[in-house]
Length: 248
Ligand code: NAP
Image 1: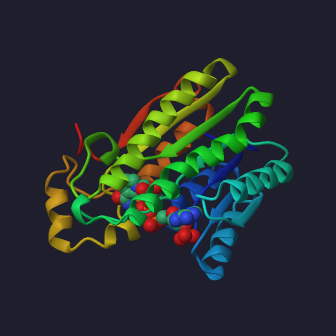
Image 2: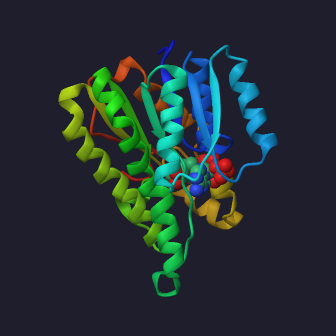
């Protein structure tokens, strides 16, 4: 699977799953525009340098994914710099876990805005270019929690379920123009997001995973490579679980 000259935009790629995806896609020959929000300059520059080593074009942009206007601007800049856009990946996401009883309104709003509204923002900003080109692959990183639900994560699960509904809807709207939209639903992946869990909870999760290990960011990146490449040209509107069989 190669991505030679494909132009890729990804949100949140200085660490975790987003970084693994950016590296995998650059290794396959794709030009990468990535965003960051809280990351420091050192992390951004290190990511840029690693990506450039693959001999591809690289662009980094500071933006809060929940900001509609700012997102439009960075997507426009990417399209201008790269001369178009082939793959859009919505990876930026956060958790603010709490039982609903104790969940402040602000934590509901923040999670829905960063995880779900961000997807509306990027797709709205890219859609005209995709329509003109009559091609495009949209890949949204949701979670198995968006399918199963999870106690203590009403905000996060609702945002991820929303991503799935959104993706299936745009797959229906845009399919006739050869624009594809799919979801990757990771299970338990070893990143900063899951590092917050205490070791005994982590062990309990692993016991329930048929493949008996946590996932790695690279496991998700391999699936993203497939969906970004022409090898998945006849696949749209799907939710692909990368979870070691956790949710079956
Ligand atoms: P992570 O290590 O915490 O990384 C989160 C990424 O999101 C960072 O690159 C961060 O960029 C970016 N981000 C956060 N808030 C942002 C904002 N307001 N605007 C723009 N970017 C923002 O988490 P991860 O585990 O790699 O998660 C990546 C995606 O996979 C998320 O959507 C997450 O929900 C999903 N996922 C993860 C797991 C898992 O087990 N790890 C499971 C299922 C789904 P900055 O650092 O620059 O702010």
